Length: 233
Length: 129
Image (cartoon, rainbow over the protein chains, first blue to last red):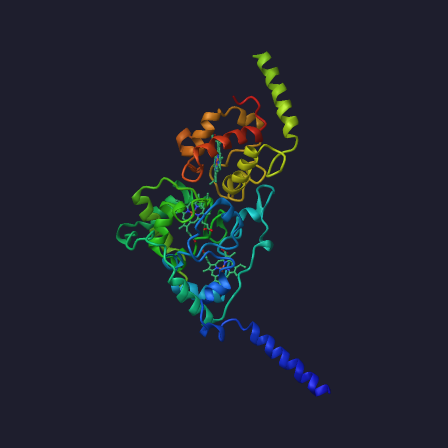
């Protein structure tokens, strides 16, 4: 009696474990892992109607142009051990609270990202790399030979005010935009320059404004951003 | 001048009475004010503060601090046209800091005009025009 109970219990546990084992079994099945596990929070295709309300209610950043945006190696690593990219969460205004000497972010309320195992991460990264921006990001937009990273740093931190919304080192900079201190590992240069030039191409309502940047500014700031996070390798 | 001042005071009292308590995204205002408040929460509060007091989450290292939009005296000296210009074309266009970005790529002309009216409402600047 006792033995069979234990048996039943452990069989149940195995069943539960199987049911919750996310990928190893399921990955072979037809259909996309991404669609099943990730689409509830991320747009995987370009939204037909990108309204302010859509932005206001989205649960995660858009991934429909992920293949043009990310370095695959970074994706594989991050999906297994996600770190905070947006200090205020995907929508900073949902976690901001008034304070002195300034408003703060309720960091405890910022969502933690689900993690997956190494095998799943590789598969998901492969799928993400298939998602392209439909020609928005053009290869070769960034020209490394003409980019002076030191001048880019000055533009980023002082002249052009990017630091108001982005951190260029942990703890240095604003909180409403994604951190950029690992931009060189995370992001592709052609995406960085294209986004910076006109963020509204990616979402017409995103709260990064289109800043007035000359072509040399764009090149040198991208050069600077691509150098961030490289030291750690 | 004195008479104007008294009239202005009356106006301030009046708008004060209507507005009673200060905004954020409360419910009872006109639809235009509510719509502008919503846009302000997304685009402006990051620097100008959730309480519109210039103390947003992004103000840590800024060399020039954002305007306190709740400051009646300070904001009263700002003509509506200049607000519209600053919001559309950025601080640089009105000889202020370029840390105040241009919003014409994000907000429509009409939304920017409504935003100026909203700022006049927020600062209780009954006298601004």
